[in-house]
Image 1 (cartoon, rainbow, N blue to C red):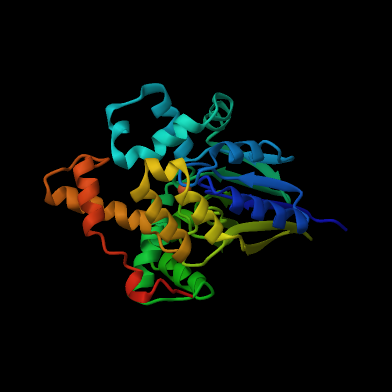
Image 2: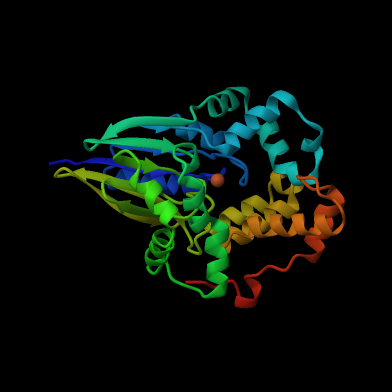
Length: 322
Ligand SMILES: [Fe+2]
């Protein structure tokens, strides 16, 4: 008997080779349906190709992420701060996207609900949009939390679920909020950490970032849900793709010309799996505070100063984490 299989994919961030690899792998495993969870563009030079590939998927539910929401607002308003160097990737993407692809991506819905395997699926880019527990769940599962824990005491992907579960259980507020949710499957992205956990009849699942993984593992993650015998089985998968070739293309692209500092942190992020874009952005804010520049995005002077003073925290470890 053929089972119904739903492939969950999130946070592509313009990484066409990763998206292609994941779609190919999911098809080979018999995916019958697709759920795409937002953030399709920004960090890699394929915004149109990603938008067009999404539109070829059949039986797909596709929602937008915070990137598409923000770009939609910028497109209409063209604010002054969009001229800052920190915003160069946004300017580049807005310029490169065809009108048809921009209309498609920015016009996607923010949430979706549907049935799968006899359960209600609630889809949103960031889980905080659906239920108030989200901010707490994010706190213990965010890229920053994961990265800082990893720097404190490195752990492997197989050790992570126990660590994340213990962090959730240690918070009575989070536990109570999860218990209060209506039964169902809550699918979200945004945190760039592949994870899933169950509490009673509730399944929470984040397939990780297909194009921009920050869980210290290399490759493109996605999650397959299989409906069989009245249950939903969860498989966390990760597909290899040619990261060196992608970085080579990135560094030869006009995106790199427009946003070289950003692209350098992007390249290091996909090489190490550490959220180095986030790490650098926090450093830039700290440098801004030191210089009395508290605006965000930061000024170009702060951005340059931050790049000159930033220490890549993975270098001390040679960038190698299991
Ligand atoms: Fe994202």
